[in-house]
Image (tube, rainbow, N blue to C red; front, top):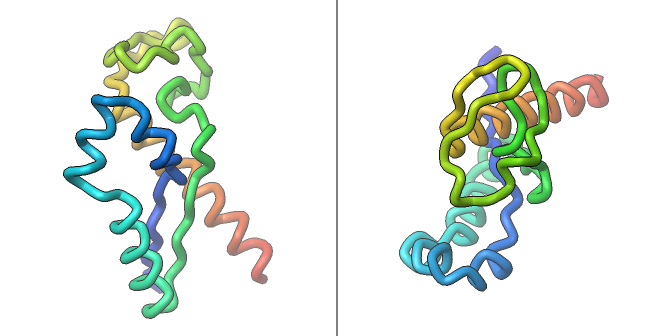
Length: 115
């Protein structure tokens, strides 16, 4: 059985628009419209959309050892090294990996409950 799921972060678009630099990108790529289309298409095809809580610290968690590094909250920090396992992380890639893992975890819980 082949299952397609979409995992997205539940973004606070209105809050993000308060930041001048982020707002410019949002105006060029309306994320909320993309999410609406994804939800519509998923519903149409009986697929599942999994959204990760917007407060999940995806860019602070080491995707290798799960250590949460609160020192990297500042968005200007683009690369960091985990103080526990010494893995070097690029902020956005690491966050994407963590969102994927969290989404798969939520999907497995969903499957377990639907049995």
